Image (tube, rainbow, N blue to C red; front, top):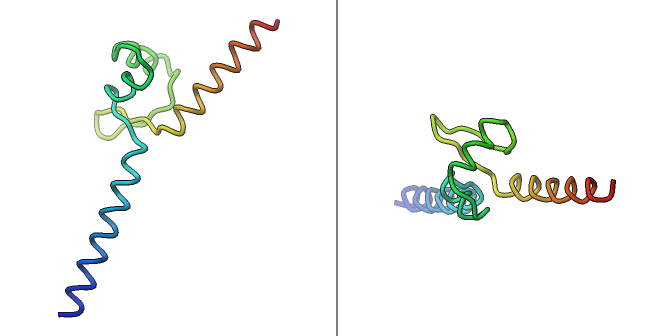
Length: 84
């Protein structure tokens, strides 16, 4: 009985950790909403290798921290060009 109770708590803990980790990963639709662009823009940038992304099966996924870093780099690049 005790072992079953402990195993149940362990499964709940793992499940809640997975939910937290998944909140940092976005789909193409979620990313397009986040960046306020059309999904075809996301696919176009993926094709050109311009976005940090990874595939799960045939679906693209995006780590929000990587996207935020990428956005900052894009801002820095634009500032550097303007100052040239």
